[in-house]
Image 1: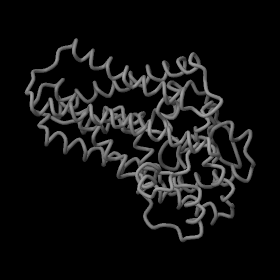
Image 2: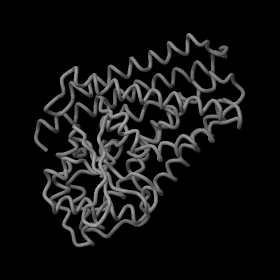
Image 3: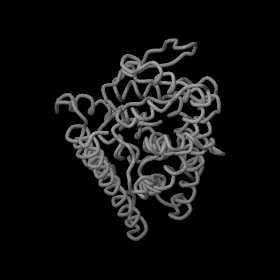
Image 4: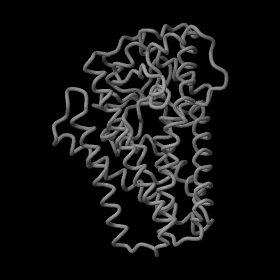
Amino acid sequence: MTPAQMQLARRRLWLGITNVGFWVLAACAGIFWLVNCRAHAPGTGLLFEIGVGVITAQAVFDFIGGVTLMPGPRPTVMTFLRGWSRGALVHTLVLAGVGIVSAISLRLTGGFGAGIVLATVALALARRHLLRAIGGVAITEHAHDGEEILTATVNDPAFTGGIVGLGRRAKSLLPARWMDTLPQPEIAAESSRRRWQIANDLPARAFVLILNWNLLGTFIGTQVLHLADRPPAVALLGHACWMTLWAFASLLVLPAMSRKAVFAADRAAADSGYDPRAWITRFSDLIGEDGSPNAAVQTIFYPVPSAEQRLRQLGQPSPGFVPGNLARGNLYYSWATFTLLGRAVHCNVGRPALWVFPPSA
């Protein structure tokens, strides 16, 4: 990465820390009110004001991340607003749907677990369609080297796509610009990495682990805050605040567990006869982040290891149990827990297509 890219990456990291910190403090304030004020259920007007306040506050961070701290060529303000307004509207509607499902789940079961299961499954099934709706993305399906893949036309240079679907029917989604501009050996290396992940059911494994992680979080929150005994609107606000804190804990815990999947996929590509070294070196430049020389920052904030780490690990045996892409996967699936934190981190704040597919390796 160039010095300018590294400086931009540091600024985006601080933007993400500030954005996440803002919502963590807001969630703490909400839980303090819930525990200490014993207030009656908020009226419709107050709920509307809270919703508008949340959208407005996040819009400020999105503007900084989507215009001021975007890699060149930066979009104009009007170009950003057109794309962002579409993405923010669809994302808000999705969260509103999650809120309705959560309220029904609380009423019928006394908890939010059933709602999280339904919403998470729906997000898994609708991911491809949500990318189209939120990012305004054109997705094409075609054959490549004997396999069916998907390509997406996305302007954001950090868009990496990912794996769509679960099980053996899952497909690789690649940026169309990669297919047009990258050397064929590098495309082949990345395709091999993704084939290995699909063949070993890593997307399904990560899905199950993420779902259970979030179910554990909502169970603890419901019990500790006695949400089942509170008025529905109060319980839903308490659930959103608690799961924001749980998502924050995920940001601290899951990155270290996710790096094994990157190392294992690199090793698998090499074992299959591909040389991923050139691709690993290029990848950091494409996504605009290359870890951090600070070990603590690297461990907490970067589930995608630096190119140096990946190249060094390439000579080591494949790790044992590989849980999958938990950290960046949960950014998307955390929508099912009624929190905004999944679009507030440094890698995707202000970048609608990356709310659905955060940069992943």
